[in-house]
Image (cartoon, rainbow, N blue to C red):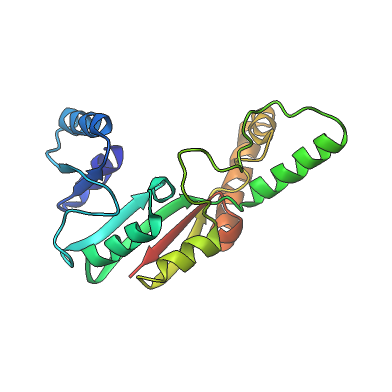
Length: 201
């Protein structure tokens, strides 16, 4: 609902899709409180309830790896958009530089006999995810149904163990410089970024 509120100023007619009745009610309440009367439909991404070829743009942010069948959802997105329309998809990168460094840190800790304090490590697939996405998996899957014309990254190293504590210990100006610099790098090297964003036609 927050994304719909943020996009609503563009003047576009927006439609939200949500399978959970609880989240659907929450979304409708949030939209109402913010003065928006946007359609939010109860549906799944694998079966978008719109006329094929009727949508200008599809936005799927941080959800594709929760779908029961992400491949089918991408096919539905491709079917829903008009010729020349766009799909923008953002997803966590399970092969990010931060996760690679984290694996190395925990491997060293294990060699030193330091016990792992976590039940699940950040780079392990959570139980509510169906696919472990990375750059190649996402781009390969999307290219089956659409043409990926732009790939960019967002953020770098945020999932590295101890990274937040280290940034907290630094002066605010230096922290800001580091974070912004890494964000610029993530745009150049999306394979290493924390989040991958693709734009498809």
